Amino acid sequence: MDKKTISRDGTPVAYERTGDGPAVILVSGAMSTGATVAPLAVPLADRFTVVSYDRRGRGASGDTKPYAVAREVEDLAALIEAVGGEASLYGHSSGGALVLEAAASGLPLRRVAVYEAPYAVHEGGAKERMEYTDHLTEALEHGRRGDAVELFLRLTGLAEEMIQGARQSPMWPGMEALAPSLAYDDAVMGDGLVPRDRLASITVPVLSLGGGASAAWMREAARAVVEAAPRGTYRTLEGQSHMVDPEALGPALAEFFS
Image 1 (cartoon, helix red, strand yellow):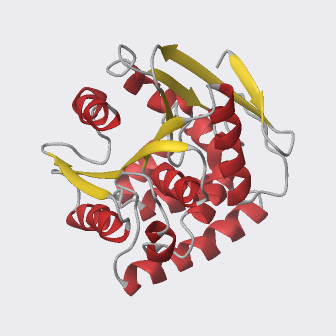
Image 2 (tube, one colour):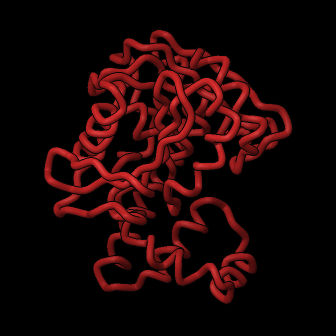
Image 3 (cartoon, rainbow, N blue to C red):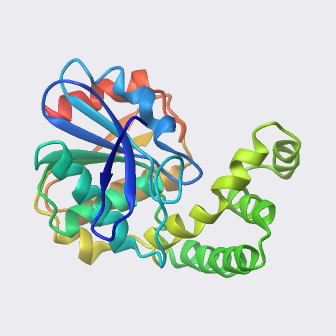
């Protein structure tokens, strides 16, 4: 990240920009940085100014305490100002939930797109997230970053043997470094249910995407977003999972943002 802007509370937000045209800001999900979504700039940069950034508490960005979801919305406001005062937003997973909250907050946006914002569509899913929140808070309060990462991986449905394999991998120290930001994504998700009242207040067009190879509940959640947003459109990317291929996603976003 070679550029920085300053958020309202003084937090430096590191970002990169590429391409030329209307601004599109890419928002990463949990356990990820701006580098995670940066490959998506490749299929978009010939038509848009594409911005990838490190959310607060990650990478080269700062982390002013105390955390609040509103501070992350202010980070996006600072980025929008830095790229000309208006932008479209794309968010992956819990980054999509942040994008939708930013839109509901009235930031100067043209359009917003989200890929599989992981909302629960039934009360049982919300209960599971509440239990996750309790255990995550306890692990982070006691400095057990590895346990926090394990909790998140279980929440995503990763098999136990794969979790233990991840613990032995070279990636694990980097995952533990990002562990405190899991609490931020958890806060962004609220009670875990689709925030229908907030979505109903969004005035800009919303594209909600799901992967044809993803779990059925993820596509159901993606459809629930557009049922609540007044100007919502749903689209399935066939053959794609939650870890969507930028080459498959890019054309769909380019069409929508155009």
